Length: 333
Ligand code: ISE
Image (cartoon, rainbow, N blue to C red):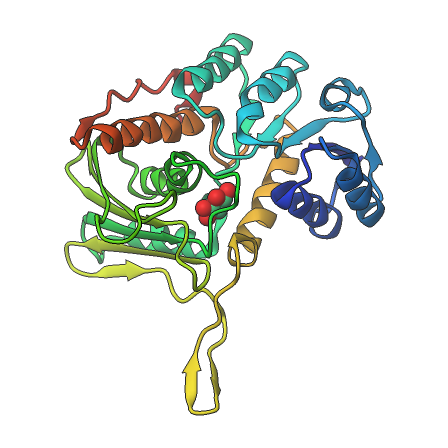
């Protein structure tokens, strides 16, 4: 029996999920898709063989659909995830779970009331082989305790619909999530600076410094208009050594008196393995015997709580303390 999937939103990420589902996820059937643009929905349907639904809620309600992927705009994530919970359908919701912590909290409250974890938040880096190897090697003891984690997050350019807050609420959230997962530690305070040189336009670089509850430091550069390529870096500094993510490509080219790696234009090639492994895990988790290994709704809430503190720190120029919620028992492993 295959798992029948519906996808809501087939823009950049939803279309990528649709293609990955039909080509790389055995046991999954892409049953229907919906998009606010009917032309876009039809184009992806023609490519993948999915049906087209003219309403997002028709996908959620359809008894012939077992699980839902939500990849619509950020502001719609919470309500669609709640609709999936009301229908008791497993849902992979793209990050962020909600634009505000108050909205994200309603998702975990609903899930707790149901008493079963149905939500996976699309923090796919938890499946990226490089981060997984970093976490595994850091745990073997040879490196000693992790002390600092340096992150760099650069995009070629911010999309036109990016507003001044989204470098934090839509981009830096990946770093907040991967730092929590890698260090198994919670954020305690956060400060945000930015260079005063340059034009200060939306999407100018930001530099964030977090202390964690266990006394570690996390530094994050977010530059959504870096111009040259999609470039994500990470270096974990431990007591006796460091672990760094390697270059963005598997090959290095030498040609015409020059050598180096090519950068992808966006995150899809860099994290293709992570997206595929996340979808495979999600489809497997539809069977309650195999709980999702992805980020939970609580992890989604935590990334958004951290983003809110970072936005406050950016606005008032002060180091801001976080009051992370206690982990409810449903979310303790
Ligand atoms: C985008 O939505 C993503 O999720 C990418 O992974 C991230 O690098 C980018 O900054 C976000 O806008």
